[in-house]
Length: 399
Image (cartoon, rainbow, N blue to C red):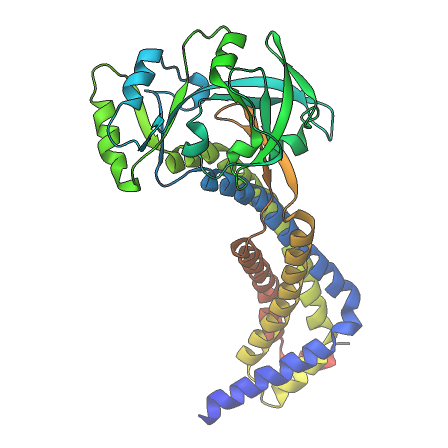
């Protein structure tokens, strides 16, 4: 036991001397810490965009909810269903039924241009025509300002996210859609889901405004239970009267987020990798300067019997310590600057804007710290090996 304990004691002694000498190298130390903090802040900040977008899509789907679209359509924008098809879908077993009928909402999805509040530039905002059952199919909707639109009237209610991001959507204002002027009568919340990015109105009125006849683009339904999905899907997809695909709401919204989250994740890691290269060189410079400043000290310790491995490990610990300090600072900066920052972006599946908030999650912070640790270990490896290999006699003669 004496050997390992002695080795650990050696590492502790060398590490202590190294940490106590940090103020003497504060310029290089500060550059390293700031560089690593920048890498972590950028990585976590960019990935928080994907995390926020993914979370919006994840909470938009209900376990007992399903969406029916034309077979082959990857979004509602390119789907189409006739009135007879909608009727057959609504009559399918497995859908929850109330005294007013099945909880199935045939819906129309169109895009309108509205200016962003922040920039004034036009953006594609989704306008959804719904049927009365929509408010039970999506039972997490709540009117938080004004009132719900009246069926059969040219009125709209606006999602909370859309009202925050786009101009002209305050309660009492009016927007022009098709041939009509539509008063905004209410604002609703949807637990942060994708519906908060939309404007809602009566599907029949929207059909008339856009000359869509009796056509729809999707049918959203509430099933008796999550377990009823497969039987419901099999019944519809095997029906010769229909040419449709059926997805769980959660599956549909997850697919809607795939392209954007993949793009953001690749971009985030690419930027972080390039910045990490610079941070590694900064760490190398810091640790090489530490070795140069402590050449005689290290040689003296070696002459007194301190092992090479103890020197290597102690310098790696010092480099790792600086990296972790930078990582913690970068994570804290990312959290303060990005967490819950509200914005909107294009959903490439539907070509419409989705409003969401950046999410700096614990997983992202841990990921940032891991990156910092890797940078620190790489930055400290070669200087520590050089220090361990210095010939004792020549090292003692170095200034």
